[in-house]
Structure formats: structure tokens, C-alpha cells
Amino acid sequence: MFALDRATELGHPTSLQELHAGGMEALIKLIAVTHAGITTEEFDALCRTWLASARHPRFGRPYPQTVYQPMLELLSVLDRNGFSCWIFSGGGTDFMRAWTADGYGLPPHRVIGSVGATEFRIGDGGPQLVKTPQLEVINDGPQKPSSIHRHVGQRPILAAGNTDGDLAMLQWTAASPYRTLQLVVHHTDGDREYAYDRDPILGSSTDEILATAAGQGWTVIDMAADWATIHPPSPPPLLP
Amino acid sequence: MFALDRATELGHPTSLQELHAGGMEALIKLIAVTHAGITTEEFDALCRTWLASARHPRFGRPYPQTVYQPMLELLSVLDRNGFSCWIFSGGGTDFMRAWTADGYGLPPHRVIGSVGATEFRIGDGGPQLVKTPQLEVINDGPQKPSSIHRHVGQRPILAAGNTDGDLAMLQWTAASPYRTLQLVVHHTDGDREYAYDRDPILGSSTDEILATAAGQGWTVIDMAADWATIHPPSPPPLLP
Image 1 (cartoon, chains in turn brown, cyan):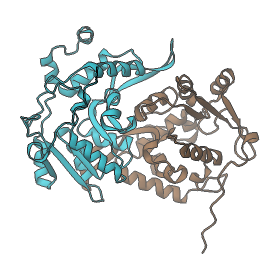
Image 2 (image 1 turned 45 degrees about the horizontal axis):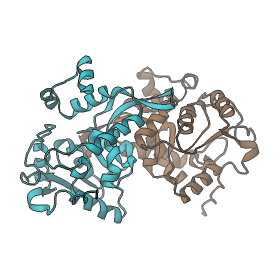
Image 3 (image 1 turned 135 degrees about the horizontal axis):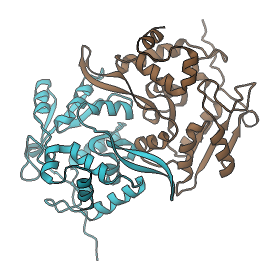
Image 4 (image 1 turned 90 degrees about the horizontal axis):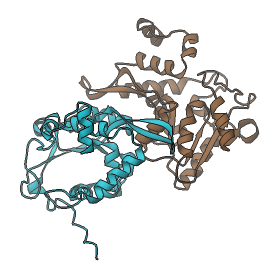
């Protein structure tokens, strides 16, 4: 509720309908505005507290346990074979990093999302970084190749995505002078996960990436047909 | 000459005096403006061609061989002991990465400098990133801790610098909850390198970092007294 009160004062979208219409950009802006003024350590602690208690309403498990089991297996086989794997997400970098070390086994520098500005200040707690409301990067669409160039400094040879926001990344990868692989995850499993051509939460379309995949012969993963397991097995409940 | 003609058209500093007065920021802006419109691969090739032929006027060796031997030894001992080492420079990231893999043995993602924008385009050569004249980050002063947070996602426990532009990075490191080490290189060796309190090329002052180092008890390296060797031994000349 704090977030929504603060957003109203600042003239940002406050209803779920407005947020939905604005997609990922509106959501990231809302988070940037409502969490401005706290340090990066405080923000990380807030994320971890939320992650420890929140449960996914449909799957009844913590959000970090709604990752895909086949993605974990792919990351693992690539890592064992000397690949350096990175995640380029539209989500906020600082939020992602609060759970991706446990969720994917990736160190923080290999997880890049949208970026809110931080400001160096010598405050009561000593020298610290404070989050500001300014949004520096919305890591989606044509921005993704630029973010990869900036953070990795090499063109990928394997890229995977599931919405049109990943298209430029896959196109840039496919144009590498080396042999490459492009993977497109198609959400076709309404029973175990979701079946859609437009993300029902963030509104991201999949029309362009599926059309390009068909035209270029990229590998399309049919979640219902190709994945034996969707989410990792639940950890056993803690004994009392 | 191409660079200077183009800069004149665009109203940027064109004399060495003007560049000197503007310091690192003017230099980085000049490079961004004069190299806009080429792809990231073309820029990398230009840098490598220049590096292969250019010689430092005073030391008579290629610029990548003017790195500091004690810095190479420190990077090596830290790497062997499980540290992850990164360079945060004021120089342009794309230029730095053209030589730091050979010069320091660091992969491109661990070398971060100032950042010029890139734009994803589907050009004649297929999907590519094109450099634009827009400067996104001047990686100096209070920006350095923000860049480290963005690229590494962890607060350092060891930081080294040599100008006031490194002060915020060292202060932020020193305020870590863990044990930390701060190193300040003082250019005191007019015979073998340079002796100054203000960088004669870029104009960066060292007053604040030396005063803070004295006040905080940070380790100050007296180049003339503490370094047996400044630059690495020259590679043997190629046989005819």
C-alpha cells in the first residue's frame, strides 16, 4: 500500500488496469519511484523479506521456485561445457539479483535487467549508494543487444527468449560469424503453466518472434509437448 | 585529421588546448562524436589497427605495454587466490576492451569504462550495433560506485586508484562491513615514469585522494620508492 500511496502523489498509474496497460515499463517505473531514497542494501533486504514470505497464487510456492526445470538443466549443461551464461531480463536488476543466485546459480554480474539510477552519498550510515526515481535502462527489445554489448562485450552464440522483446537479441545472435543456436519458448501448456500468444500479465506479444522463428528455422520449444517437467521439484517441507 | 574535421563541423573542441581544458570528458565526447555511425565490430578493428602501430612517444613501446608490472603481479596473485578482479576506468569501454584481454588477461566483461550509446539496426551487414554520438556514462568520480553496483552487483573489498576520480570508489569500498584494503598509487617517479599531483594530460587532481588516504590510514604507494620495476619487460623483437 505504501507503494500505491506514494505513486498517487507522484501522478503514476495506481490501478492494476493502468499498470497492465503500461506493461513492463509502467511496472518498472512504479517500483523505481516508490523505492527511491533507500540504499541498495536496504532495497536488497526488502526484496529478500518479500521473497521469503510471498507465494505464487496459482502454484502455491515461492516465486524463485517457479523457474523452469528445463532452463536449469540447460544452464547446467552449458556451464559444465565451458559456456558463460547470462540472463538479460526486462525485470529490475536489483530485484532479480536478490534471488537469481539461489534460483539459477548465477553470480550477480551475470544477471542484467532494467536499471534504476543510484547516487553515491556519504550518509549517516557512511558512504552508500541511494536509489533515485530515475530509470536509466528499460532492458527490452532493441535495448537487449546494446545491454549485452555493454555488460558482456561479446556477441552471444546461443540465445533463448519467449516474447517479441527478445527478438532483437536473437537476431543479433543469429548474425554472428560463428555457428549459433536460437531457442524460442512457446507457452502452449494451459494445464501445467499458461497457453498464450500475448503475456496475460505484462502484455508482451509473441507474434513477431514466432513469425521470425518460423521464417529463419529457429528452434521453437512447444512447452506442452517438449517439457516433461515445468517447475523444479518442491523442496521437502521443513520438519517442525 | 578526420576526427578533428568532423569535430569542427559539430562544434566540439578541436585544439589540444581546448581538449586539455575539458579533461577526460571532452576527450571521450570527441571520440564518441567522431566515431558515430560505425558498427561495434568496425570500431574494435580500428582500435586494434591503431594499437598495432602506435608507439608511446616517451617509452617507445606499444601503449598496451605501458601497463604497470606491479599491477600485473597484484592481479595475478589475487586471481590465484580466488578474487574476481575488475577494472573501472574513465577511458572508453570499447577502446579499453580492444587491448585489456592481452594487456591484463581480463575478459571484456570485467573492464568497464565510459560508455557511448549503441543502436541495434538491421543494416546491409545484417543485424548489428551501431555507435551513436550520445555519451551514456562518464565513468569517473561518484559514478564509479554506481557503475560497480550495476556491473558487478557486489561492493568491493579491495580497491586501488590514483586520482580524485577514484575517491568515491575507495570510500564506498572502505565502508564495506567486511575487512577491506584501499591502495592509492602516488606518481612520484619523474625519472622512470612521472612525478605529479595533477595528471599532466587529463588534468585530474590527486589532492583529495591523498588527503583522504592520509586521514583514513589507507596504503599510499610511492612509485619511486616502492616499485622495483615500472613497466613489464619488453617482448623480444621479432626475428627477421
